[in-house]
Image (cartoon, rainbow, N blue to C red; front, top):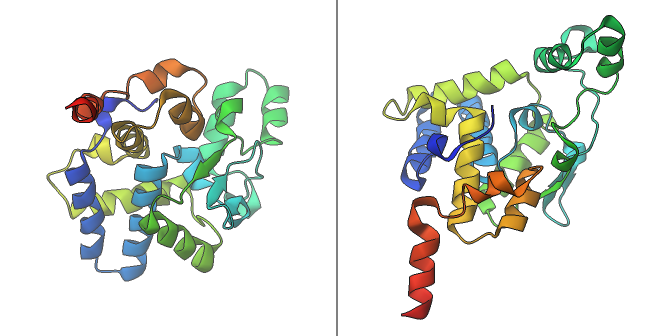
Length: 220
């Protein structure tokens, strides 16, 4: 499911969702939920990227997450593939041999363009969230289902928000809208979000008239 503008949270609703994590009674779960929301809603990582986020991907000196073209998945039972990866392999394979071959290369990004560097220098909150996951877990330590439960828990404390916007895909759309609305150009959006073509980036370029307002301000 690709992210769409319709699934994006407004800035006000995004802040409501972040604040909702402070109302989660279990402080660890609250911190993990907040980390997922900030990383998804400001860096725009895909669900599979969030699930397999590893300390090996962090470039602290340059303040970037470097998403590789391959990262061994050991999040499943007995150190095998997690459910997310098994489902992805099943969807892409037409035979038992192809399934076995694909198992050897998972996890891998959705496309070649998705192996990329994602800066986080623009947000101290995201930096702190990444530091927490790195220090406590060496990345995201759980399965995709746990990641979704953390989002659901936050949503339960912010009941007026749309469930579709608080999915990993909705948070990715939120991040794209956020950066496009601040003037990140099409090529930079495409690079940051790992899109294959410019058409996906184009749908975010005039979110809520933000670019139009900025252009008017520059000439008046």
